Structure formats: structure tokens, C-alpha cells
Length: 232
Image 1 (cartoon, rainbow, N blue to C red):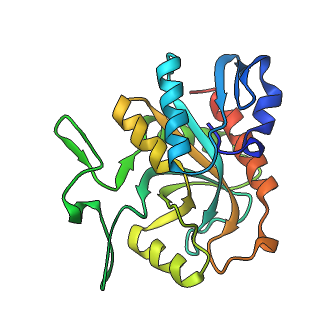
Image 2: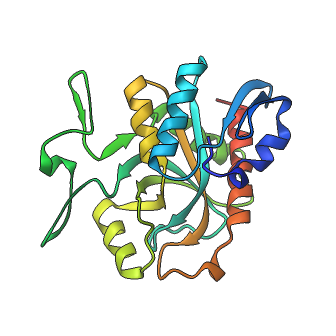
């Protein structure tokens, strides 16, 4: 899964026997295995819709959610590095009070309840897949750094250094994006294993598009995805 075509263009070209179901929905063989590539559109609803479609229409072994994202100031990441999500957090769902933001647990109503487990803002990703990804990139290093940590999903992208520090401090996160928690939410609902990786296109601080490198971030993330597809 990707949110926009540029995040999956290398993968789309590499698909063998590509069958276009729609202009943004492809099937084919990649790394010697059958793959469906979905381009969801940006944001939580589009991502949740695509994840649900894929789960209902195909016997998936896993979902790999990839794309670009911003790195928080203290993450240690730089543009072109790749981040792997250990867990996803909804950064907007909750209550804003005088002392700051509080998650959905303050409301007392979980976003998802499955069996005895209640999910409020946090959705862990598949631990086995995360460990395999970290081990794979350690054994076969890529020409950029790869780091695992907490991701935050927001509807309003952070465009000030002050807000970046606040979110980073609140959630101890390394990467910001607009879709991941919604995909993790759907995968938790259906019991589908999920791995999420994002190439770092920018640092989360005062917004300056001139500093960004979306092309490099997208290319590096797809390079990592192709390597991981060979072993998962």
C-alpha cells in the first residue's frame, strides 16, 4: 500500500505480468511472489478504505504500508533514511485541554475493542515482521540508515518546530505521517499482519518545502521494501 503513485512507482514498474484492475490498483509478481499494489490516496479514510478492500478481496499473508514521512527533531534520522514503525499512534483523536492533548482514553471509549483488548490511540504493528525487517537490514545494510520506532499519524501536518517538539515529547515518536494508524487500526480489526516503512522526506520543524526531498525518500523506501519482500 502507498498513498500516492510516486511512493510506489518503482514497485509498479517492477511488477511482472502486471494486471491493472483500476488505474490505481495493480496485481503482478514481485520478488517471486504474488503482490497487489494499492494506491489509496492521502489521509486516514482513504488508507482505511484501501486496506479493507485488500483484506476482503485477497487472501493476504500481510500488508506492507510504505511511503514518505517526516522525522521528528530528536529521532536521529536524516532525509533519505528509512523508518520502520514499531507502533502507530493516532495523534489527533482525543481531547485538547488547558494542559494539552489527551488521547481517546480520557473519553473512555476505545476506537477498537476486540475480545478483551481495548485500543485507544495506540496500535502495535506485527512484532515478528518488525524484528525480521530490522534483522534483514542489519545483515544486508542499505546505503542509508534504517531505524525502528514509534510513528504518529495526524490529520493536520506539523509545520512548526514548537509543535514538532510537543508531539515528539508527548509520544516519544520518530516519524510523522497521515495514514499509518488507520491502516494499523484496520489490520488489528481483521487480524492481518502489518509492516510499515517510510522514507524520510523532511524534518518536522518550521515548514519549508525547499528543504524536502520526496523523490529520494520514496526511492529509498521502495528499495527497502523490495529487499524485505524477498524474505517475509
